[in-house]
Image (spheres, rainbow, N blue to C red):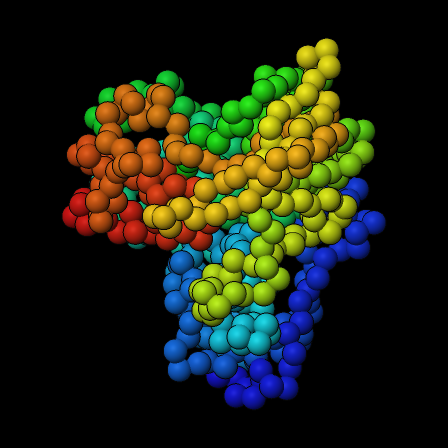
Length: 472
């Protein structure tokens, strides 16, 4: 531990965001960075507790006290090596992870957690700056071939581990670029896509084969995949969005969040979108239905597209500002979260259900909402009740549905393979991540349901270990 009293002498200091009146006009990353000395001071606040709950709270098992100490002592090679030992691309989680590690940090008891996520991102950037991040291809190949279907965090994490084990790994991606939701689901103002390309360059040098614009089950059959590879990993995510079953859903101007975000990411990358297909918030009153991270991304993107107004509604009650007695540290706090996008100009409303969408000449113009309450039945299940007489009309010329995802898309590859599903419609796997089909494994959202990037990374690691054992 660099400084045993660092957490007493140094206050938590966040890097903060670029000026609001500057950032809303571009898609550059919003978050700023601290200078090297400030970052060392922040790392010195890590107490190296007897029981590091941050390590317990991190899904990828990051050895946080160890690399904080390395930062403090300016040993960036060691810090990066420790980070990379549990995470194939810490520069990405350092930007987009909600940091459950910080919520379980001992200092979080007093709302002064170590700035673990920011320290992570800056450490990797320093390592790249110093030339410490280089390709390290395996010296021996096993002769075994593995196909990974999907290039999101689970697929890339597994591909990296399997390649390092000496197997020949081919990653198939249906989109025109590698990265999955990291590429097309997360806005550039949170994750610059050059960060992905930089890491992919290293993976390519290390021998991973990438095949974008290739839909398995269409461009290559599942039979060929099973015949030509010794193991197959399904890592396609959970891309079936939860729909809104209400009057007016068919109106023009109602879109799933991912349609909106993916298109804008393509535009930012320089790809052309036909005017008739463009989903634009410019000059419109935007209604985002759903209060999670994806909804927040819709808010920030709508503001950058120069929306007339942005309203975000959530069906659940407004979370408390602080932890409740039944939600103690070190568990994830179910408290109010405010993103940089919310700070840019958004009206947020809670406990509202959408009764109908109202159109004019086939285009959505308004939404009728009603207040709801939540009560438990005798079995402890939450039930929603509408409050009569609380109906309201909200202007809505662009409606973005951001209510989460229900399951992976079954039509196509999964149906063709004939894999079993669990009760929620995800691919059913055993402890070793193997599906009901021999030599077919699954990792990430496709088998556990929509979740965090860090959970997907860990699932990819687990699947890679299981596949390596299977091939051995």
